[in-house]
Image (cartoon, rainbow, N blue to C red):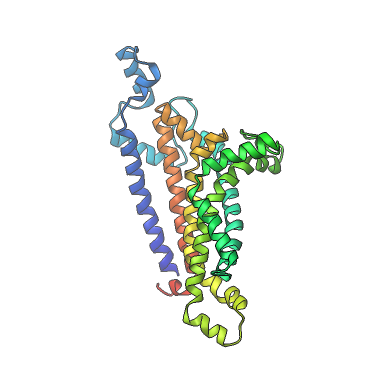
Length: 315
């Protein structure tokens, strides 16, 4: 098990180094100079040069890369070109919106998908299976921003149970904040729940056809007992993969939903930074999201080892 973890840690470190180089190069080669953008097209060349020197844009790119990476290792993400505030503070403020939103959506997605997938697998070919698969097909086909707009129309405008947008914050208690995030979380969770339910059903059906499941039935276990005692655990590896990928998507890919509900999260911060050519913010936020994705994949690998003892023995 120790060797398995060490190999995954080495892979994680290499992935982070490669990702940081790729992010820096892609952002740096994007057209447009931040200093010229901030000062406007009529700015004098000496004024632009002075601002570039103030922002640290006049040094070679390799020096800027090393300074950026070394700063991130110590928790210093630099200073925003536009807002002149530490990027780490901006990320911390926005993370308290995006992270709870992603976790909330993941919990809802899992709570919907697990019972639906197990129910469909247990009733393969019957009316319940057809109904669940039809609903999941609709969930996969319809984009989440359409769900978001429908949620606003039904629950915010017509029923007035929720606000149409904005975030109330956590100062008045967790329930107030979760209430503000409910519609966005449901909008994100429904399509992901449809995907996860289909994976759960397919994985369970594959396991139910294995020889050891027939042996369990031959020993006197009912179909339900065999499913819950043996099939569910063995079907979890592909499901864990999808859950890890979904959390990464929910954390890094909710830009549209944050725009629809006007949430001050990381996705909206990246959108605003790109519009303002605030390179240091774009680089730092994207790198943080990449780190989150790689770390989630690392944790999923550890979950594999916990679920499948065969992986622990390969050390």
